[in-house]
Length: 242
Image 1 (cartoon, one colour):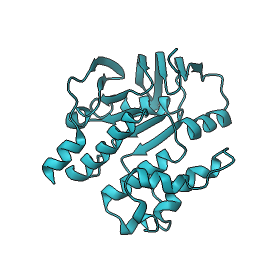
Image 2 (tube, rainbow, N blue to C red; image 1 turned 90 degrees about the horizontal axis):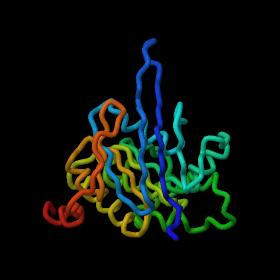
Image 3 (cartoon, rainbow, N blue to C red; image 1 turned 120 degrees about the horizontal axis):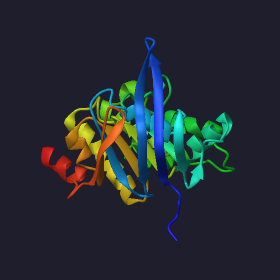
Image 4 (cartoon, rainbow, N blue to C red; image 1 turned 90 degrees about the vertical axis):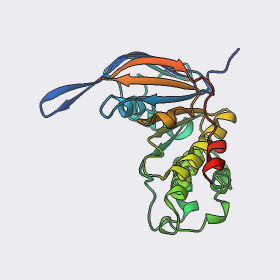
């Protein structure tokens, strides 16, 4: 029997916002299933609903209607503190802006989510996460002492520190040069090979080509959903530009 851990299922999910007294339909009848261990890229123009979709999947926002099941369980009845616990345990977030505390070391930034961790033993998790992204030797550096690519890798380590099944990344290469972006994508591909479910939001088709599956969302609706034939290998691309 296939494990449900890391499985994402949306059925006819809708989300509407109010903007300047106008209703904006951010998600319209979205039905989507992401199996454990998939690497999915969600592409679409600005305002298409990509980030709203990530917010719903990441339990940061509730849909107005429809069903969202995480690990096979309907999350609609969960209270706010239960949703917070699920986010902390099961989902790691990576954003375009790194959101690192400027006066806090790389290791201390990575360890921040552990404040809410319910595990009995969290020793060494931060150092292990930094090692996963190749920054073990930068643990005591402040963000101002790191390059943009290194800062994003610290942000990825922070997303990994609780060892979640799902990684949600919203335009993670948007503030990076091409070489740093490829290095970050290589990390995502390696995490996926290790069994992590990765959902990556991007407007860049070259970034989406690194995933195993591509969804396109336009005006809040999924218009295409297809596998990527021969996904590009970020590490190989990185060696070419180095």
